[in-house]
Image (cartoon, rainbow, N blue to C red):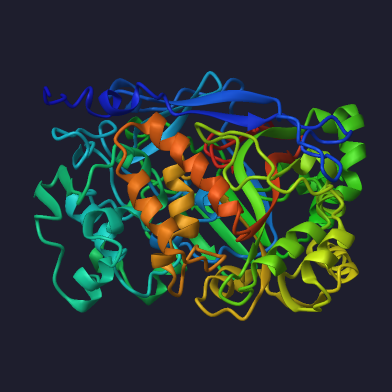
Length: 586
């Protein structure tokens, strides 16, 4: 095979599949497409297609195109329920944390929206990388003029140091793709991070000069340029690293952190950010004030009222509270301020299979689960379509199916038959909030109708991820969700169901460990054709659901209000509110 040039390195491997994904269309307020009676079959969801294409070096240059009507100045307020679990880019993963991080961190690659479609482009790098061996070795060249907020130029060694920090056993919550692909599933055995001394050898990550970084993967990964589009590839100054880094990481983006405590995160302009190097970000507002502690109902009420500073406000993650769903859909001035669009998330309720070991008990949980009642509490059909699969309709190769054909409101009588007179106790954990408490009551009532005894366990939002990702968390059932980090099954099922990843910090929320599934993950991962690979991931989805490691809940749609003085409001590729183009109209 001819060695691909830098220009064609990514495209040669991925253009044939174009990473085409699909997404469920929103329900119109009636019965969702997946809602069927007991014994019926779910009608295929109507889908719309979206795609991510590969940009070249020209698409990777700055500055970003100006937003029509944009102006400079003012303070944007961002409302969130709780502080981000982490700001250290090594551990940033939830979509709201990734969205805010876009203002002060930069990665090797990133996503640029052009005419409503996403394009992968170089961010720190001049393009999306090059490979000369079919996807096992990847080379990136850094742009000139990229600096840290103290004016120090960013070098390839700073990027390598940021990668080395991912090996620290204490950095448990971020994505693991890069260290695992470089050093294997047990990557911490190969190297324990720079705090333990030493550096990754050149045979793993090479920096031949200040502008070049070369990754030597253990296997072929055509999707590598997508994997380095997340915050964990952000450069880190070794001299600035330390215990306080998680609270206020050094900036390479248009803003830097002025203040951060458990009530507020304040960002101000980074005078050492050069827009000529950045293809996606602007710095229109003077300041950002991210305020923590609101509940869903309160946040929606403030957006509906739209007075004072709320005119200048957005939220990264608050959807429209269910109590306002009808008003938002019918009141014209609110509809004009409603963000809604494709979201790659599937929300589900993980069943801890290390504790709930009886398959019939897991089937009974799924059968009794009151999906429709919970969805109404979460916002009704605008929240999303009821799910029956693990993979999202945004993943290439998605096929709609329903193995169990349970009515949307659950079937407690059928669940009782599965329990055969048993009355298992289920510890249900959930994040503390008014909405989650109402949902917990509905879940408790639904399961107890089938004979379960439900113990509710509310958890602080600030510690939710830390507690639920503990290997032995003490919970049987808990809300979770996942979005593939790119539109393919390789970013979904291995992360959630590879039993070899079960440690503290695991994203295998179901604690599912099956040797046959682990082997199937290895087999599918080695398939070189991405289209065929995604077909096989869909087949594995069905095999997994035979074991009921989760209760699929909803294919999510993002539906958010924003203030009337906010311009260029949009959603990012992960379904959070995008902040990179926002400005205040007056």
